[in-house]
Length: 128
Image (cartoon, rainbow, N blue to C red; front, side):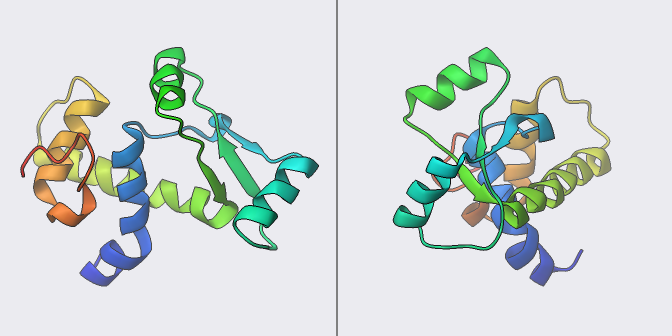
């Protein structure tokens, strides 16, 4: 992957993963209901893509997520780009040859390898 792809294609997804503090699974996304779509269009504007809300399955993640007042809605293409972000994180970790005991360790390590812009204002700005 070249720098252009990292910064403009998958970079925003990596930033979202740093902000979330975990890599969401496909089963944690739910398409909006008809009323939620209307609210989304009124707030964000119209899109012809499907829109999903993220509801973490892990109760600990969900409590942290909800306590911050976070609601993550994203279009299908944004949701799909998270796979690219997750692949970048996994590649950095695999290439390091290190063993990681948690997603927190992985995210902190990857944050230390990328420019500060990716992890700015997240708990993974470990190298700042």
